[in-house]
Image (cartoon, rainbow, N blue to C red; front, top):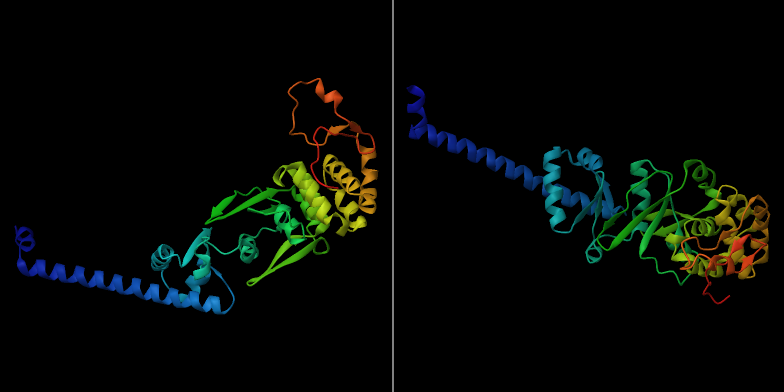
Amino acid sequence: MRSQQSATNPAALLIGHFIFKKIRESQLFAYNVGMASLDQYLDTQLIRGRAHFTREEALTELRLSPLALKAAIGRLAKKQRVANLRHGFYLILRPEDRVAGAPDPARWIDPLMKYQGIDYRVSLLRAAAFHGSSHQAAMTFQVIVPKQLRDFEIGRHRLQFVFQSPAAFAVVNQPEWLGSMKSEAGFARVAGVELTLLDCARYFHKSAGINGLAQIVKDIGAQADARKLAKGAEVYENAAVRRLGYLLDQARYEPQAGALEPFVKAAKTSISLDPSVKPLIASLVKEAPRVAKWKLVINETVETDF
């Protein structure tokens, strides 16, 4: 009986409303404080030359609760001030980044991979362009990793992770085989010329096909150190090495092609230059020209001006 009376007591209702209002005000105050402090934190990061931050770093420096930080990040994300990349790693967007939806991946791939504890190298089309293959307009940012990772898109950028066996990756992903891709935010690890050629030959279906590979070989093949090229080729598939050797030969880069010629001895049979090309009539395979030097069946015309 008393409980019913207190429930309808105007004084009790007034006190309850007052308490609810104060709780709501305190939550709103905490939310606004979180917004303001995160905004200042982002500005400080940019002044330091860092266009990224992690959830753990922000929690430690700002001393916000996880819930308050999440709310603040959510609101700034709607304003295109930050972008949630993955796994608690965030990008800070400058006004000039907002059209593309994110900065160029070269600016943040290194801290992202370090945050995830995964070694990497930028390679294929982006690395080829870095080394001077001007024909390669890399629409996708390709990264070689020793672990299966999902590709993802952020804004207009697409990241593609290409798996290489951990054993082979460990051998070649060493400082002497790599270069540095400089950006405003620091450096990213990029495949050297030799690794770029070998990667493109191994994963040529991701490098604009056989003609894209031929163009890359023509553009940067002369830069390759023949000794390093042969050493790196030891951990790549024999078919990829022969494919690369043939195209280097066609481009008349004799030292580089000659360094790969010994690998042909390990091949038992001839293979197609482009395995993805299948003739409409099976008997036509026999009519394709063969190059005994590289044990290749030239089943596709290479449309590059050698």
